[in-house]
Length: 464
Ligand SMILES: *Cc1c(COP(=O)(O)O)cnc(C)c1O
View 1 (tube, helix red, strand yellow):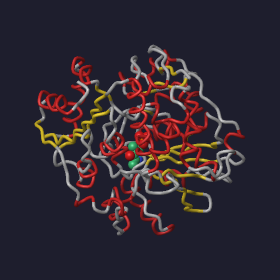
View 2 (view 1 turned 120 degrees about the vertical axis):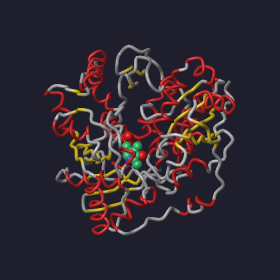
View 3 (view 1 turned 45 degrees about the vertical axis):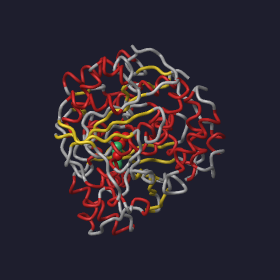
């Protein structure tokens, strides 16, 4: 199994190198040279098996033998053991032809745990084998930091330093990070904004000497292993609803296009998926593209679904690569033009191919609150704002005779204020997190100053 860059000018790598590299050296994203397939017999044989076993079988071909099958099965089982539901990603029926796939039973109550719980273990496994270590650094406005910390905590080959803007993160989100007291976890509260935190992280990566000395790394959403791990729950859900004999459709709330791309990958592998419906908030560049061939960048607006407040969706480039018949040079040219003009035109035929498969719905905050209230009233289900946008897309783009699965990406208790505003009910944290507000916290306050942050990272990291 070899991986190529979507821009065609980076070295071809195997799985372990792609895992550790993240972004390709030419600025592109890694994709498999050829996508492995599951036959109908393979898919049928997954019925009734536990999540970890389905996930192992779906992912194994992507490793190209670089991790032993038993080792990998052990990592996968371990990654999902701590989830708060035995089914890991349970399906719940909302309507005669509509199901919710709950992806929020991981440690931080959002779907990023599904990929990151495995990613942390994969990093550790590969690094230990190589006798290497890394220092993961990242900035968070609150949403993603906790999932990265939970993924890396207690991993012998990893130190993780996460910067958050002091006093500008909600209490629950801060505590999900700062109450992890593992010795390899370092929370830094920066006297500044989220943008300051991001600039500090960028500056550390741009300082080549520091980057190499600390072996800086990231676990961001373009990492191929995250996509691969997400393809598994599409297969898991579809076989429960009758695949491969029966087609299934998926509705996905989207920001960076990672989650829906994972579904697209599952379809390429042979899963009978009739189509996708994506949902966006007011940051609707993807809804405008699939709905009207208008991919033009506008300023980012803060919304009630902050994990989707994104204008340039990094994983879209992987779809673009396929639309350009896997021509790296053409993809690179399209991306350069997009960066320079703020607008991406792919031509009528390519757009139609994409729009036939992927329908879109964009709703604003008022619409999101209405969906939460309506679904609560009709089905009794409490949806977080992200999941509500997915359900709105599912309901708009039903395909007759095909069951639709809407992906629920966050637990409602992760966004209690919005849910309460919508329907008057304040969702409660699951029992295992009920004492979050009483737990001991640890974070280091630092000024918005690169030298101070670098000195801290040096002290924290064991890599140097
Ligand atoms: C990250 C995130 C999304 C968007 O997922 P992408 O893979 O970026 O499209 C949606 N909902 C929640 C709760 C998230 O954390």
